Image (cartoon, rainbow, N blue to C red):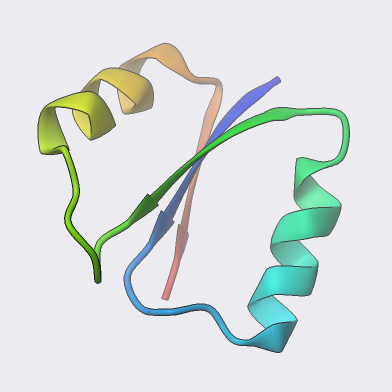
Length: 56
C-alpha cells in the first residue's frame, strides 16, 4: 500500500512511533508543511496513493 504522511508540525516521539508502525510493509511519502513543500508533488501523491494520513 502507498501512504502519504502530511506533517503540519514537527512530530513528537509518540507520533514518530505511530508513523513507524503504520509504515511497516508500505511505501511512504512524507511531506512536512513546517518546512518547504512542493505542493504540486504533494497533490500528485495524494491522488496516486491509497491513503493519506495528516499528523498534527
